[in-house]
Image (cartoon, rainbow, N blue to C red; front, top):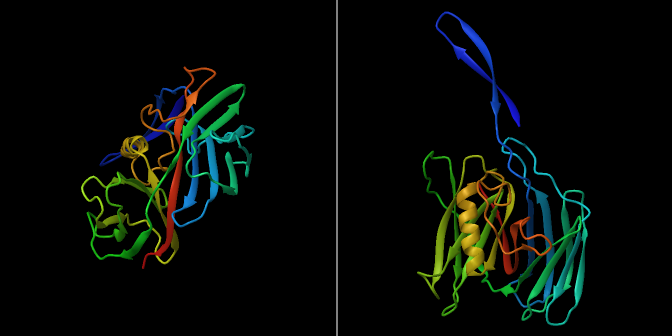
Length: 268
């Protein structure tokens, strides 16, 4: 694809403007699937389903094209109960609320788009409640960052991995490898553009080791604040979703089932 860039060269006595015709290669378009089932860490079987479908776009595109008209189903592998997930908007989001989740059974995601079938299987991963989220007074590089300190009690003798959503495309993944069973706190820093005096919800979800490795690499590729971990990655990183119709046309993205806790936070 061609992009026009205007290079303005300022001289001491004169100025000139030159148009540069730059060739930027286009990568083959890929389907991206972000599929998540969540239930509260507290005692309830009620869960929410959200599946986001989009296509990758070229590097300089300002929007990510949504995928509508897909057939999205989730099946309880043990009982063959099927949930048909309807599209909730015109932005490629398919959702369902208040489904009863069998916490012991694996579930299969099946998505049919233009005659091709995409499938993945996942099972509930436990998490822990958030004990507290408070604002700190430390900064990093610019002096304008906002520190928040998140605390939780890890479960002893259970290998835990966590995915934490701090809002505004700020994410973090962690493991309890070095603090198993401990009361743990850590700092996270928003950049200077994070809005003050506006409520944001911070979510903590349980993930398994495979998802932890996937999102750790994906976040390192995409960076924070760069469109989130589900924008077009800088390289092809495959998740746990397969194209069972055409294996060469594999999708990007991940299907996970997580316990979740969520708390509000307002930076001052």
